[in-house]
Image 1 (cartoon, rainbow, N blue to C red):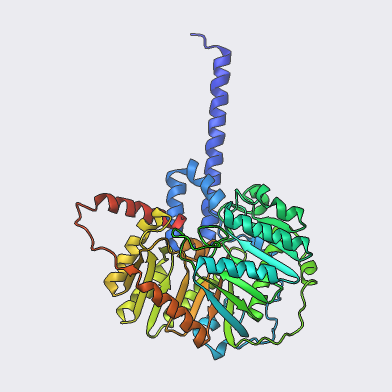
Image 2 (image 1 turned 45 degrees about the vertical axis):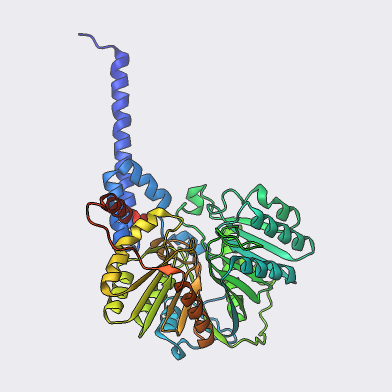
Length: 481
């Protein structure tokens, strides 16, 4: 039987292409696994990615290359702090005079604590919006704003309009937007600010991947600094869900602070380092704008600025939280919208609860990401069995982030108590050490308790079959969230 030459050539060419694709896929999988194993990841995260890469390679390998990056050496090389490491600021306080937390953060790459600060907590969305707008109006030289989400709503419109007005008046206005979180608001929506002379830059655009990073590395920091001396930091994004001119029933319960003093200058250094990286503007040009002359600050608060992210060799914020928990003598209060800890944090909390410490978690009864609600169930059950107290906030979505230990140390900032915030995102935290400031945080957290209820008793096995299935799948995916 004669086989047409065209058919033979087609079969051969198809076989060659299939073989090359198979070999290419295998090599990519080997590369992905080698990169995965070389990174410092929690075991659960490593196992989850291994399963996806090995069992579904044609899906797992591209996803890992797109989303799996955690630390990028080329970012670490390009992105540096404007304040040289080890440089002594006025008001710097030796961490040895404080807690193991301060010492751990400093030795893992963070700034040492600084004195001379004042702080005002922001616990209401309309209050935060009013303070934000007031500081924009009062700025004399510079306004630096960094956010994960800028809403295309009345809140976003009002902010862009006022920032544009200040730019026209000669104030240097810089707006740094995460490219994914602000995907629909970083282009034409911000044109009024650009046309007024302000600058708008997107942080780590998803494309092109080869030159800028991966879609997984997001800038989750929320920082606004005015004249290098006053800063607003916390969990508030610039959108109606988080802040606005009037109270709104559906607004998230969020938390932040206005900080004046040397800590605000350090927050501005974090902003400018991010800006220099994203805009490719030389750092030395940015530092010329800033007066480094010592200033007399009237505040008495001691605090420590903690940046964390893929541009740093270690996990400074994670280690600081771990030190806070392990150093606790009486109480650990955690307020967070999402609770997906790694094994070390979970075991540390369990040990403290079993030792009789007051371990209290405040979470939204129902968050805006249902998959994280299913994923948290396993961890909450273990903590409750160890004696921890779990409180579910019922009025609405709780977006606040805080850790308070012994009424002596308090942490606020942008980081959630989950694997993404602690190991993947660019995040910012501020640790408060002064008794008055920490007491104000403790009183705010305590005020949430009256709006909370404990979790409902577990249902019978037959009744919770579907819930258990959703929980198991969510737990499997939790390290990838």
